[in-house]
Amino acid sequence: MAKKKKSSDEQLIFLPLGGSGEIGMNLNLYGIGDQWIMVDFGMSFAGDHFPGVDLVLPDITFIEERVDMLKGIVLTHAHEDHIGAIPYLWAQLRVPMYATPFTAHLIRKKLAEVGLLDEAEIIEIPIGGSFSIEPFDITYVPLPHSIAEGNALKIDTPHGTIFHTGDWKLDASPQIGMPACEKTLSKIGDDGVLAMVGDSTNAFSTKSAGSEQDVYDNMLELVSGLKNRVLISTFASNIARVQTIGRIAKETGRHLAIFGRSLHRVTEAAKETGYLKDFPEIMDEEHVMDLPRDKVLVMSTGCQGEARAALSRIAEGQFKKFSLAADDHVLFSSKIIPGNEISIGRLINGLIEKGVDVITEHDAFIHVSGHPGQPDLEAMYGWIRPEMAVPVHGEVRHMTKHAKLAKGWGVGKTLVPKNGDIIRLAPDGPVKIDQAPYGKLVVDGSCIIPADGEVMAERRRLLHHGHLVVAVALDRNGDMSSEAECVSYGIPGWQEGGALEDRALDIIEQVIDNMPKQKLFDDGVVDEAIRRAVRKMLSLEIGKKPIVQVRVLREYDD
Image (cartoon, rainbow, N blue to C red):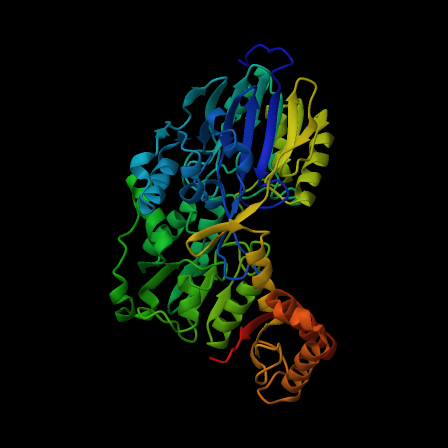
């Protein structure tokens, strides 16, 4: 049962710092008085807006400044957009983490890789288990998802119960784990729920998410009719799909090979925590090409067109241990994540050019989502019956649609949050009462830097406009002692000794000749005048504004 309400001076606060207004990078905070808990600590993958960067992390300045008030981090499941920031940012918080066994296993491996395992406190909670982080009493509520041990959280507070769904779906035959328990969920609703904070990813889908059993049945029929090599690419974390592919290898008499470090890591973790018990033996990569083509089934990473993933390297002929030939088959058992359309299209086109038969979810029923469609959402609201709905985990359009659906299903109050919104859930909520600092960090090599900082802005300018370095030598009188030198990178139309370079050199001489004598002895003034003049000329001549760096050299006689 929910606890009795406290006085209004100790408000129940909800604050998303990631995952509200975007898909990925989930990080949510709940607070009462000076006590806070964090639910999930995820990352997202960088797109073209962050050149040279792979990973994007949430800015945790708000809670880092209040770290003595943060009592724990509760993880719903092991997808990267829910636990991926841990190895990069946990050391700034150093609070206990709570997770069910499979998720805890993967977190330990992540922390071991960065040398933090011995410093972290990871509290493993059994499936369906309960624990307390005062003043919050928390129970894991198992729900199917596309990874082992998807969980909602029942969070009992002095103000009422929050049902935080995490990522979920309804599936009567999920292959891994148990179906959602209608009796358990209805009992939670019977006891009263203040707010449901829930997954919005598939709010526009009018169909239920679908069952993994149906994927198995359809993929088995498909693969049984294929000749030559078959490669199936899927998300490494989708243990249910991994299990499905393993079963299909056994049923079709094919030897199973796995390519991709993340697939090996997750498969190993699943076995060590009691999953994949009847999984076929994985053959050595070195011997895959020795088998007859119709005896091979490969499971591979790279379904999103990632440049360094196994499938991309196979398509480019850069994977030494395996190759595809004409009339082999590649199945994309996955959905296209928004933003990855170009990279996936490039990958598919490269495979087709080699004569490979490509099959996607648009060609055959070989993938189901791990997120709830409208029928699933409606069923959940029928069981939980919250006083208010707070959609998260989606772009603004997804969350807004979710809120409208919840209203139509009888939920009295809704609020669509944005990252950084400080929202009072109780008393008299939901209402935004303040704004917290929020934003994004990027993992750039071994550095973590602001996503909106000068480094990223400069790199985008380099990418889109090019770079020009100008060296100007001045003597003791402020006169040019020799012609300026220019080195260009990525500037269209620029050639050494060409018209554009000649025009730039003329501009530089004009700047020096027209500058008041006293200013010629100030390197900063000379630098800025030349930079502005050359950049303006290039903008007029070629429509580009490259980064222009000027180096002023002083030459004096002995």
